[in-house]
Length: 255
Image (cartoon, rainbow, N blue to C red; front, side):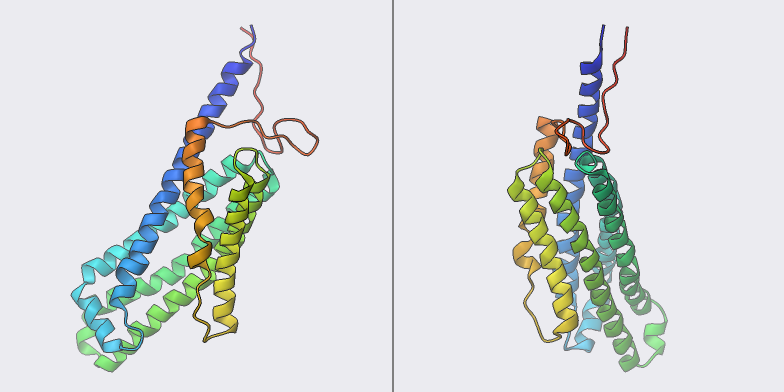
């Protein structure tokens, strides 16, 4: 008796679990990152008023530290997503899926030094140095560290944008997702790249492309939840056979 179908079903369930992990991972990032940036950091920092910024952070030190912790969790989720996306997109093109995974890890690694700048602020204002150093020195250090955080975030988003370009191409070529989703994910990647390069090349440029191109990222969450429910079809490769490069092939087991 051939148990191929049974083995294939087990493989499909495994992919569903990974899709569910990816969906919850993306959902967690979609909540934590904006909460830390827009809900906390941007409300405490007044770019043109260093004194008010320092005062705001001191008064809301716990909230500020929670934002740092949230950003760190987002970085952990990036590592999880690098693995999950590789597993889910490997059947489409194993080589590109590996590159996409490495780019996600590179983005996470690029963000950690930026995040350390916020921790420097928390340690400075929460330690004895804040009361021993002149206020102007403390304020200058705080504003410099916050600026370094944003610069590091911009660099990280450029790498992340490259990652999304690869994800978009793989999603576009996959039979698991509608092609328009791949196009929207590519657009999201282009938006992040445009944001970073305009800030580098045109300092006075204030328009933020990613505020309008992020739709593909949001829809990926829905798509992964949907695939976790519906399961996965086999991917055709370039020669018209199922199970593209890197796909796990079911093995016949005689009983």
